[in-house]
Image 1 (tube, rainbow, N blue to C red):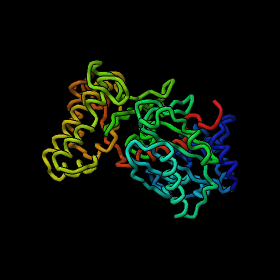
Image 2: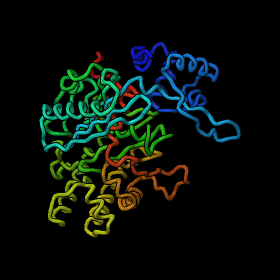
Image 3: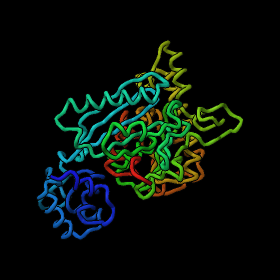
Image 4: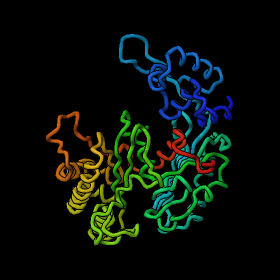
Length: 400
């Protein structure tokens, strides 16, 4: 198996060879049957069969088993890229934690580790922790980092697609940091980067609540408020990388100061930062959002009330988003989503109240669906892996 050839097929869009289409589709979607490949690539079944025969002979594609075809007859054989063909690294640069996931090209997770880090850590400290997590990940399994196909980085703030710099509104010490300059010396592989909400959207459409949807909105409720817009299966980044920053839509220009520097942003009113502080005062010690959710689900009325209020405030913001996009699907992400109906019910009620198009006036097929994220704590980092598997956007270390 030639890893150089695999990298070429994954990266090169011209010419669009049948083998290249098949390899990229398997990279993006994971295991599937030949019939599914024909439908998704638009290639004739005979063309897919011929290309697959060559890809299997070169050991680039392998059979993984069978799945029911949904009708009478033999089950369809499923195929995937050879797991030995290479690995991908996903990195999440969060406000208080750094996460690293190593996966192979068949979408199998090989390692998932998180390090809690001090608030307002420096970029140099962040790079040090990333290096430690990656070294530990490869030390604990047989695959070599020499077969690394690419690195995806999710960061808590918009990333300029032009310069690769983290823009304001995210992690304070990382504003203005060029991600390729920081991480490029660590890797002999393409580096992709995007904000964590865009990465979460990639995870949802690849493995999660948005599978089968080409158009949807992701809405993040956490210590910050964010989001992503997906159209035609692609995340819209905007001309400067700032699309989907729902949390920094100004609701009241005379309102409280937001961490982005503006006043009265949606995030000021709908983030869980203040409710978390109230929950900590209630119990008398430090808490994480997951702790508040657990207490609420166990019956703590104060925590239940705080989550319901967060859902109601988040629904007001979502009503604004719904009136702009009227999406078929909204995936609600962030750690609050693990509260389930406790968050989603007041969110849905508030969304209905504040959106222009009322679901009660529409037939079922024309109503916006609201779904909680399929990921509890690794969606953004999985989406960083997806940046590589999907070759989403321009690698930071290639000329624009």
